[in-house]
Length: 176
Image (spheres, rainbow, N blue to C red):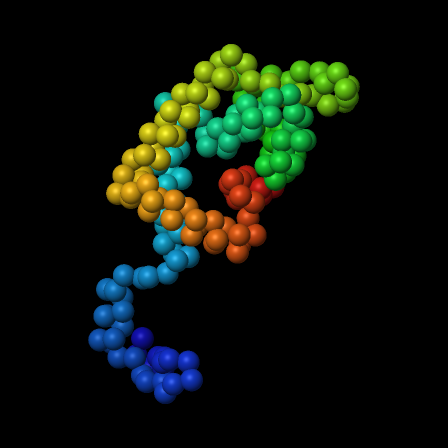
């Protein structure tokens, strides 16, 4: 760091010393992006652990929720609604179907399309997953009042909008 010239924009730069570098290295980094990134990493990891007893991945939970909310919709329609590439939807549905959690049925209105439906086991797993997710959310927000939680969600939603992300859709699912 010796010899590094930094200063306020438009102000006079000064040479940072080794002591300045040591002080900066020990200071916590206060950045919204860094804080969201590191928090998101830990939250995602722990949420995956919360769903582990059901052998369910978060992306599978998201698709089960969508199938339950739009029973009988085609894979294509659900993919478009969730902004998930078709190839990714097929893989997730294949895995859920192999486990007996969803089934593809003929669509009487369009013989080429398959309608997605939860099986009885899929409904049961989804209900248990909702219970685990609710418990996880409660634990995650234990240090916040209901009002603070809503305020946090409102502020984060503004960041979501600024980034152009679809509300309620995990950005990782939208990548091919």
